[in-house]
Length: 502
Image (tube, rainbow, N blue to C red):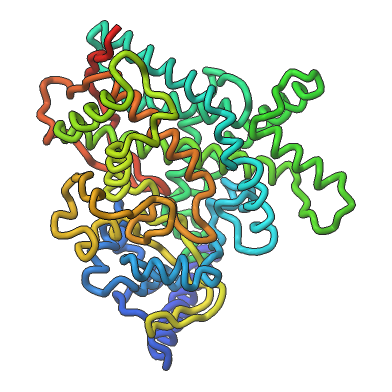
């Protein structure tokens, strides 16, 4: 009874503190961005719903592209236009370059010891530079071209066999399998043990990392675990850690037996650990086993779930729009021919494919709110005061539907809209930044785009597709699930027919 009374008193005191803090902010002489008033304790958390990107988009229509919300105890800025995104990710990039400390990152990223979720500072800059030079350089990516070709070839063979049998293909499962296999071989240098369901672990990882956790926004409620997330995070973290420990131990054993090719990601990261441990150079940051696991996990998460999600949505939109599918197949026929499969060297000549990819990522960005940023100091932008330690949510889903950029038919899937502009996906154009921009831009963007374009082009070139049960294209279910990424709510199913000339 005494513990219950103490808990109630803590909640009451917490509510008073949060409310007074919010009133102090609102009453201050510095002008906050406009936004909704929240409830005691939770602030505006209740307004997010199951699809926060959509609900925040509706609120932005009322309050504007730079919107202030109090989410629990945390001052939060929601950015919903290209101009505002540019201010955050370019003009004042260094101010907003950090990451908040979230419970998910503590559990799932070994205390944020990798690169994706780590606070801005010397260590992050060091690890990012290492990743850029050693893991995601053009030379390193190109060195795995044969792996990608082999795995995609196996995918086509499997689908061809199912086409001959007239079977329905679970495209989502097939795509997840091939992307997982490619990532596994690139990271660990070996074929995946079929007992390991890595893609399910990673998808749960990204789902949990994207949830708005009360423990992050109302810390004094954290011990109560009202959402049951702490146990889920612990379970997922333990499963991932057990897997990574086994892989690292196995790899170290193989190295001692000289049974590896010394070109995959785990070799590189382990060599960095050994270098930092054995060096007397004080400028080198120590990289221990936890760092190694966090960096590998970042590479796996960034190289699997985002690519799987993108491919799912691209193929979904192509099935919904037969005209676009036919036009893409016509381009593939002209560039590649009907007697051979697509080669990576063909990708740069597939202009319409690139437009299809851009248009899909406009409507279905892989990370609809990006990974949250955090301001490192007080700043005024566009006349609005942004307090230090504000959480910054960049709503790329809303930006992709900005009628001032994309005209009134913003919900229409129309790849040709990119014929008249040079908007790219490299973080230069803030109208379309599904991978972020500036210092915190996704380091594996080039590898991800190669994987996506190669798998999509191969499946579209080698096969004609139709929906099961004679379902009309416009009735394909396009519901989504929210997390750090935004996958389809249901698996994509279709019936293939092989179309290449034998």
